[in-house]
Image (cartoon, rainbow, N blue to C red; front, side, top):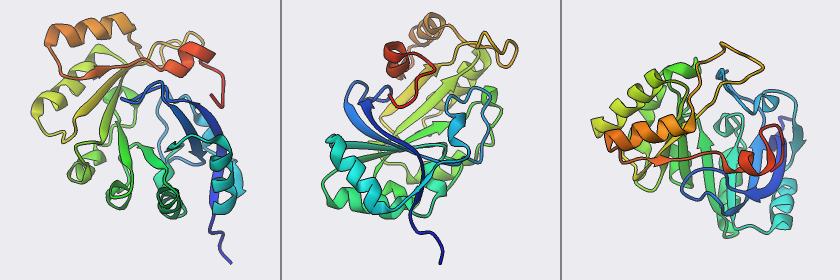
Length: 224
């Protein structure tokens, strides 16, 4: 019999570190597996492994945490067949559900059930396939689009998308990714102040964000 639950890397209670709900307590469900390999990925430990859990076991963990906001992340949560049934159960119990997705897999069914945070992959990610274009029509105004900026070229690419008027959401997020000292040359990296000044100079109507959880607990801490 095929396994009908979920492959889970971790479930934890913490503050949302990004999006327009930054600072709000959430239960995070990090599902295992991703079909992309972004050069700056900070959750590569979720590519493989994980624990097989029934939906009931996942729900019990969520109830124990107590937060009414739940984020499904990864990896790529929409690669697992058990994700949509889990969202339906969460909603039935009154939880508000968000999904962080790279937008390279269809979002239509999930969009009707949850708030979508679509992480559009810039050229600097090494994974800019632009399949997210097919999902733009399924985004709702209350969903959010995130651009992770690795360089000035990434910024200009993302800026063109913002100015195009083709992003059908109210919240557009720009996040800087800084050079990893242990891996020089892997990607250019952007200083947060530089990105902030570019946004202000160009009068872009976007939300600048830093990863709050990393500022509080450090870049290498899991489960926060």
